[in-house]
Structure formats: structure tokens, C-alpha cells
Amino acid sequence: MNFAVVNLGCKVNRVESDDAAALLAARGRETREEDADLVVVNTCTVTGEAEKKTRKAVRRALRANDRALVVVTGCAAALDPSFFEGLDDRVEVVGKAALRERIAEVADALSSSQATLGEGDAVAAEEASVPVAHDGASLLRVGTGFRTRVGVKVQDGCDNACSFCIVHVARGRAASRPADEVVRECAAYAAAGAKEIVLTGINLGSYRDVGASRCDARETRLPDLLEMLLDETADLRAPNEPPVRFRISSIEPRDVGGDLVEVLARSEGRVCRHLHLPLQSGSSKVLREMARPYDAAAYLALVHELRERVSGIALSTDVIVGFPGETDGDFQETLSLSRACGFSKIHVFPYSRRAGTPAAAREDQVGAAAKAARAARLRALSDELRRADYARRAGSVELALVEEDGLATVESHHRVAAPPGAALGSLVPIRLPECPAEEL
Ligand code: SF4
Image (cartoon, rainbow, N blue to C red; front, top):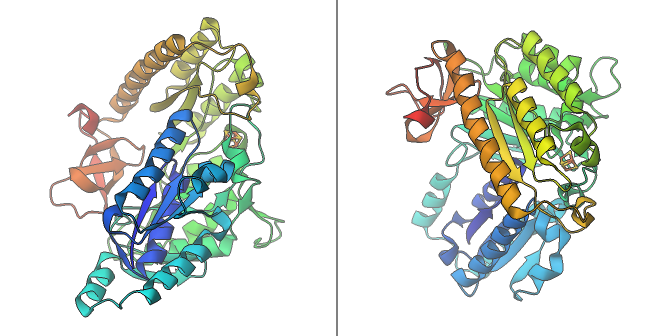
């Protein structure tokens, strides 16, 4: 059974796709789409552009060969299953909840209907992906795709309702994995040699396990989970090697409380002192219309608190430009607040109208030219701020994860040249040179 997994979209999708690939790798061989009997396409709908790419990816999978079954899953498929089902009889839309079970079923059926693999093929399949642990919900492997940084999904869905967002509709209500299951999975990765684990979720800060509480606490929240992970993995390392570190993929400002700040401040880098803290706009008026539960002053106060209590923390963010009704004045407030926050990176998203959201129904949409101009202006500021953040760190020492192409990612998430000869996936101290990798 040959399979291919095509991923689009965010880090959560990436983790889910890797998980699907690991599950299928135990049953067959990962190949190009042209040679696959089964193609899984994990779709995205966060912007109009992402949706276009999704539709193209499914059509490409159908064109790649004329026999593969194409399983379409993810946010775009959840919102409009009939579009994908209407493309071809070979398309099957599967919800995220049923995905593991269904692709295992399909793969087993395909395997039994084909000649069994020859001995050489079986060895090749084994080498292509090395399962190292099985933890009920998660088949783990350390091999291609997992060698350096491992993503672990701990949460899905979102109970907020930002007025521009369709993802919370596609993903449904917030749900968290049991803490003990997450700890077992991360410990298995650490024992297998992973040095950086990125905790991911659609709304990670809402993580809450009511069934696995420690001590007298009624529920396990993200800071408690981090403490558990730090405890359980501290000794899972070879002599003279640093223990695995954890990175929080993205967290809403409302979910950064004193407990989390405390963990960040005390963990000495085992929880990376880097937070991705979506701002979305620097205008309190626009934030209110986006239904974001903070204003510009509250956001800035949080940034000041983080900088005061967590030495050397790096902060990156997401900003939407051209939200309906956004004026030049509102945009200027975004520029000013971004500067005051001293972000190390701003991911700039020109507003994309998503059908079914309150913002899409507004009549005061911003024109394409204004959106493009604001996006370019903010990206230029992002570059300037990134260079300034890096310049403040140049000459200091940070632990860096050695990745592909001779690059390494330091704790603050800047990328630098890896030390010659450093092993892929290792965590090594690096004195930050004058120039980050982007400038070389
Ligand atoms: S926090 Fe807002 S933007 Fe993020 S997934 Fe939830 S509703 Fe969407």
C-alpha cells in the first residue's frame, strides 16, 4: 500500500498530517502522489488564498494518478464537504475525529487487496519511518520529518468567536487531550532523542484537563501541564546533553496569566522564552469590532509585564490589516503599538473575507490597494523590528536546535548558522553572531 499525505495550513494541521503519515507508515510506504494508492489531503480555510490552494491540492491529487482514493479532511472539508465530494467518486471526506480510524481501515483494505510487499520493500518501508512508541492515540516515530522539532497537539477547537474567523466554526468547540497522555507522548519523544517539542492547539491557552488534576487543583491547565512535562522529562537525556525543551506555538493574550509567566520565568529556557501572542490590531476600536477580548492598552501592559518578569523574552505576533472599517488612523495605531511592543516578528495577514463570519457581512470593506499598501508597510516594520531584536541579542549565548540546511533555531526563535559538525537535532549553545541567517 503506497500512500502520500499532503498538508496545508497551520502547525496544528502539520502535526495531524505527521500523525496520519506515521499511522500509515506502519501499514505501507510513503511515496509521491503519482504512485500512491491513498492520498490524504489535510485542508485549510483560514483565508481565501488558503482555500484556493486547498482546492488545487485536491484536484492535483486526483490528477496525479487515476486509481488513488483521496481522503480529504481538515477545516475546508468540514465547512464544505459537498464541494470536495462532488469532484470525483474517488474522494471521501472524513472528519478529524474519525480520521485515524478511517485511514487505518482504508489502508488495511488496500493492503489486503494487493500482493503482499516483497521482502526488500518491507525493509525499505521500515527504514523510511521508524515507529518508536505507541501510546494509544499517537504512533510516534523519530525519523524523516521528526528529526529536529516535534509537534504535539494537545488541544483542538475554540470557544471564542472572533468576528473575522471561520476556523472556530470548522474546528468546533474547544477540547483538550488528557494531560497524562500528553506527558507519556512527550516523554517517549524525549527518550527517543527529540530535543524540542512544540505544543500546539487551535486555542492552546484554553487547554484544560478536568480529569487528570494533580494535588488539589480542580483542573490541569497549560501552566500545570508544562510543570508536569518539565518534571517528567528532566532526566530523559544522555550524559552531558541538555534535556528536551518545550515551545508554546501560539497563545491568546487573554490566556497569559501569572502562572504561565511564572513557569516561563523559572524554567531557565526549558520552556522557550518566546511567545507568539496574536495582536491582530493596535486599534482598540478595531479590536472591539473583531470581538477580541482586550484593548491596545491591556495588550501593551501584558507585554511590559512579560518583559519585566521573563528576562530576554522574544515576542512575535499576528496582525490583520484592512479589517472592515479600518482607517488610516487605526492602522497608524497598529504601527505605533507594534513598535512599542518591540516584536521579533510580525506575521502580516491582509484581511480575507470568510463567508459566514460577521466581518464578511460588513459593507465597509477596505479596498485591495489599501490593504496591500498597509501590509507592505507593516512587513517593512516587521523586518526593522526583527533586526533590532536580534541586534540586542548578538553576542549573547542561547541554546540552539540544529536543523536542516546548516541552520539552527535559537531559543528566541531567530535562525543562525549552525556550528560546523553539530549533529542534526541536537541542542547546542551558540554565541549569537553579528548577523542572523536571514541576513547572510
Ligand atoms: S481565538 Fe479567535 S482567531 Fe483564534 S481560532 Fe478562536 S475565534 Fe479564531
